[in-house]
Image (cartoon, rainbow over all chains, first blue to last red; front, side, top):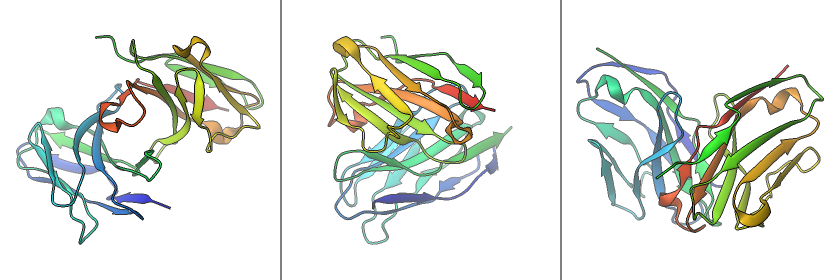
Length: 111
Length: 115
């Protein structure tokens, strides 16, 4: 079945460092791809999405590009802040329109 | 607008006991979801409701888990009897319509510990 693999954490960075969180997927069709973020004590929130190949999703300085040739949707940010510390989940929509999540990557940004 | 409300926030029970979680979705949201998030894993869909009808419960362990959404508004998820492996965060989410995944809103979850 469809699945998502993302890099294990925790990822620890200093403030203003460059962030990459890798995500690859396996899917039979052409899924939409998502990044969700979970701040401490809060529910998951949609961070960004892309619905077709070569689409770039962006929000709050984060970006991810839907790469069909490498089946990837890596999350990037040029300069992280302490407030970006959270757990980040990559996800896809399967053929039945269900969300399939990766295992999550904890990001800790130190001042 | 108010978000998705869940209670309790935490619950500790012993194995073989029963437990129930409650969810109140965002007003007007027809679709409601329950997810199970085991530590170190991503959320897994347990059941999806459209109004008060079940759309998908293929991953719900029906021998011990049950869920209802009477009147198509709030919902209750029950586990009876609980097992150690049920320790997880149970997330409720809602959306206006089932097909619009980017308009899915999650509650903060109920953290269940089964001892």
